[in-house]
Length: 313
Image (tube, rainbow, N blue to C red; front, side, top):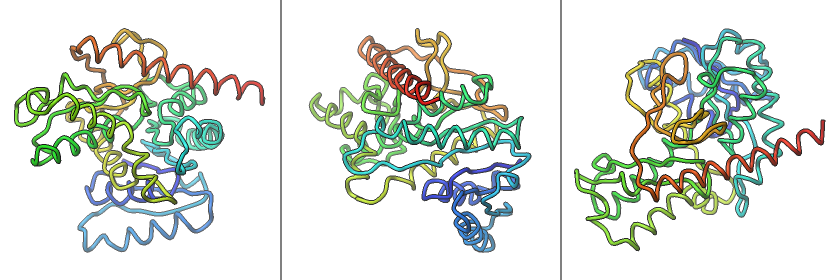
């Protein structure tokens, strides 16, 4: 299996290293439009092979021709958020980058699956769907896995336990209205609502929603990349191994959860061809309403972006 990662910034390079460390694929092409950046980072990662123990062949390029024949294209290219900038502020600029990236990548790999990482994630996934004309199964996004991992960490730290002892799920758009599902959260098999007071749970939910912004504000000149890189690798592993376990991912909904025509984070089973199926879980009425509000927000963002794009063209 060959994968290409478009964008050799911190997220793209970290994803390349993490995927290689897991020995998931035969070949990784790392691409960046800035000459030398992708080649330098790919060479650096490749030089760790004998130490890390992986067999994956890595190379970098500024030429989309070197991505030809990819089974999976991961798009991380785009402007990162700056302090005070919302994900919505990124849409106009990053839409141009994503349109160019997917057009070039798909021209060289017409049978690929596209994994969108560029923010605002849900809107950019929809841009890629529109640009490629692919079926929904071949355009998926990474967000829910990252947000869920953050939620689990914050719960675990509050309880003084390991994050692996926490079961939790974050649904909805990858933004301010994401839905950490309190009704589905538990630790060591006990419902979260019975372990922590409501005000503490509300604070954990808020911190999860602000998880990316918190890191942006601390770094000042960048955004998160270690946890996003691991999240990308986990999705790649699910596709490569076809293990059938649902993961929270961004997918285009066609009636699931009562939503239609929108990209939104939901539990998904992934396989070599991308999205295999969406798993519908019973939600509390509060979580269901929050999910619909989040999806409506994504629809509004996309409609506004489409209007701007049409006016420009």
